[in-house]
Length: 239
Image (cartoon, rainbow, N blue to C red; front, top):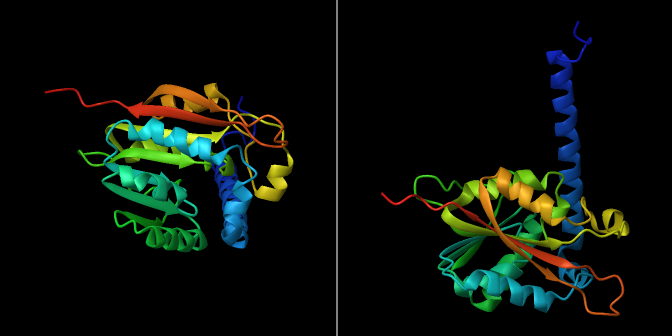
């Protein structure tokens, strides 16, 4: 005998509605946080482990092969566009915060970068599709996934936006115990283990291509270890 309510469509619909409400509330809270802190984003990033080393590693990971079309998912202030657009044919940055995008546009204008643009979009619903020979050559998540309730869903969207043979690079934190980042900096997740990220890659149909660890300098206090995880979409079989 079935347990009462276990498969009741009404209960399932109510659960879905509650989940949608929770996600929307969290998204609104995150957007409000970004709006309040947009002008100080560079100062907040100073809490993270050595930015210059991370940026150098990202360039080494991505610029060693032609980038072509680049998508920076969750571009924030546009720093990654500024860094990588000179190595790309075309660069697009998306973000859910119009305040962040305003800062990104100003950054690109001041840097004289003409092959990059930004637009309002959600990492859970990327307005791009890599099917039929289209798609990006590189998608980047730089310090984005720890803000999300469902990072795996965002990775799946990135995989869909990639063209055949395209690469996905995730730059984020290794697991840590700094609980204050949840309340003070809106982090949903306290870092990620290799197995977890590689599981998202595999589930999205991507092939993991390795990871790199960038440890904080000794004696720097509450700095965080950064990881770079690289994956690739399968190339089309030759005809």
